[in-house]
Length: 362
Image (cartoon, rainbow, N blue to C red):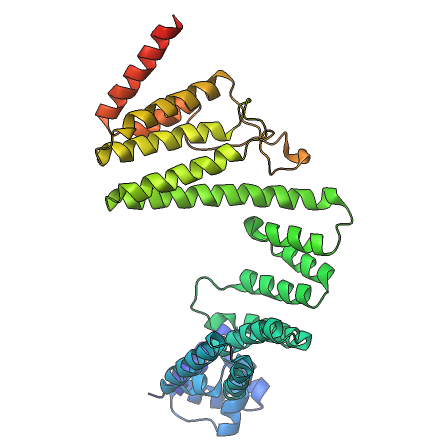
């Protein structure tokens, strides 16, 4: 299906051009552009090619041939298979042919950049990284065609930065990483790149290391909590418990001094409460054991609460006065109740454990 008239109007507006602007750029009259967009007249082929260049799209995209999408998908699939088969030179030949045919198609240009990047590593060709940068920068100009939510200018700039790192231009790469470090996205990359450059000032790199560690723990916790919720809903309680205990081990082993409280003890109390819940649902006697451990950690933490991250192995000394926050409640005991709030039987058992331990103290 050909829809040239509506595409001229669409892409002209995307470029924020008036009909007069387009007419001037092509050396034609305003009336001619108006007729094209109304479908009254059709521009000459040479003008169609020039317009495609102005709009940063392929000629096929401007004309509106739906067959283009099928051709592009075939090219992409073929290139992906060649890369998977480790036929990197053949993949480059394929993508170069595609770039010649569709020089203004985002998917082709972006895949071209990725292909050159992979080939640069696998074939040890540094010049490929230069070509990779050119194509990534070109893809940013074509970003309006992108329909993949996981790809945007920030992510592409990160890939450009990595190309510079691969070329040995580490300062340039770090500069780009820092400029596009949205929500700490590139903290780890900045820290790693700085180490490659032989850290000139450790104080400069430490914030990126520490923030990256915090993001790691946060994402890990969020991932496990989400998976546990999924396993509970699908009644895969063994998987839920395994995930919780694995996370618990990570937090316990992250402490510098096991004889002192650490912020993560609070989260461990919550983890044991969740494990008790899962064990109860699968009618496992370990539910009581987990409840006792939840009580033990919650009591230990609340007796000497620590909200700073100074007893955690991975952080540098400059992070010892940083405070942690969470949504589990003010105390560890409150976090346990939060986990058990929808199961009255376990709440009663937990109250009994608290009561018995209070009697022992008395």
